[in-house]
Image 1 (cartoon, rainbow, N blue to C red):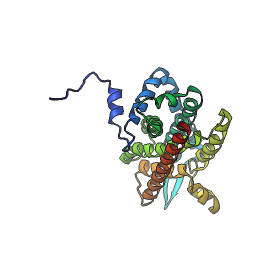
Image 2 (tube, rainbow, N blue to C red; image 1 turned 45 degrees about the vertical axis):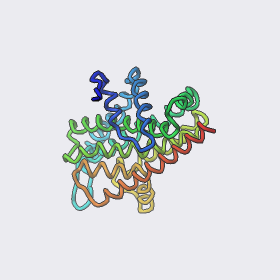
Image 3 (cartoon, rainbow, N blue to C red; image 1 turned 135 degrees about the vertical axis):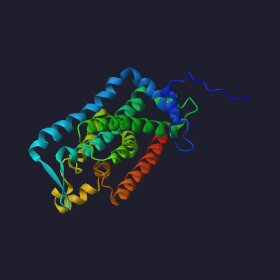
Image 4 (cartoon, one colour; image 1 turned 135 degrees about the horizontal axis):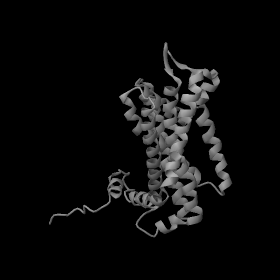
Length: 277
């Protein structure tokens, strides 16, 4: 007997069902779909997060860029300041979107709404909760990055068709930060504890070769900057948007993949410990 497909299934649900999930956590897509349905009524909150990097692009790239001029990339290569800053802001938008959703929203659901206690009454388990929330935060960061890339292209700050690969690169950045962000949220006791997350995010945003070339820092600080995850995200998206791919790309990808894997395993363990204790 042939199985009939329901053509009336909403497109959003079809897209969620198409998202691949790790073996053993396939039910996690149900939590992603639940979050999508919940945020349909508060879409303006998600949209508002898109404007911050856009404002930075025009303020820094156009305003300050007119005074700074071209940036020397080494080997005699120079690019306008706006072209230099745009990839970094794309990487930052992926980070901010993923971190915001995987920390404050998860904390509220865990401590106040008690949503995950209800989730465990369904076929979903703690691993599904971890993977589902990380997946949703990743999609949110991806939406920010895709929209920002369109604005950057319209502003003339994209130099290569390789920039299209910056969208999946932003997905990788979102996964890395969302996984570690959610794990960190499970340790928070009050809203005041989230100041520690801002204390980590803000310096990375300002000093991960975002607004200045790495060579402007002293040698000792260059090592510190290169150890931060956002630097690898910035360097990766900058190579793609400039169309200048180097062997360093493999190192950036490996760093973020390792961070995502460690963060996901860490989060799954923490969620299981909190919900099943």
